[in-house]
Length: 335
Image (cartoon, rainbow, N blue to C red; front, side, top):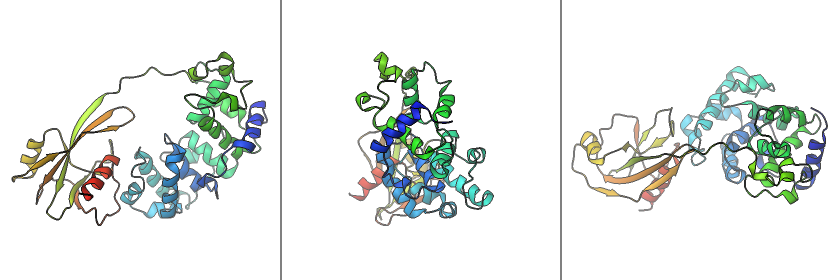
């Protein structure tokens, strides 16, 4: 971990073209870096920025986050997806307060012992907040290194990431390699003419930039189906139930689901009802697509034996909502 032609060229590029105005770079404490790194997992910077700003306003420090309810945390995560990240943040914040007196540890193994923090996130916290020379290997870094070295496998990536991480200016270097992957060495149509490595990059020399990293075989994405039962009482309130902690939308509030409307209504309504079937919605998860048929039913009571509430969109409360549920509630409130 010392000066190499790779990290020196990258730092020269960063001084001219790197991003230095991201909100988590301001007062880059370990807490702010941690929150941003978790949010940025599988999520683009432009999407994360407004979520990060609202999250920090509401949870300015680890104590505030630890003392909040999980519903409150999930509410501020609604729409960002991958909700296990929010549950892990909440759990880790409580452990930080009880085990580390409210300060994230400045130790790789201790950080990796916290929920939701792997080697890359721990390395980013240590590099960006503490200026310690720890490597990271997120998707952007993997792409840059795989192309630069034209790697046929990812077995050597951590060793190369560590080799090129400098002792001096480690925070700038860490931001630089993420920036290069996000803005120049992009997944599709990389801007090689703007890259500081366009003379050294082996993938570019071969004219095979997008062949690296070596793609994994594509899998057919299965499609699942469900029906959302949107029960509305005479006050205009909508019934929501809390989902189990494990599984999709874990811990979030959603509409009751079923595979057949009449059977569900016979079991839980015990009364006459009218139904209005809305247009199908497709929600895309990483490993499958979910086709949702929303069905609006007016009712006075429901015998559902789960944790439920009647939700009033005109008097909203802080709840974690799955993205399609939030959109449908907005449409129901606009009726």
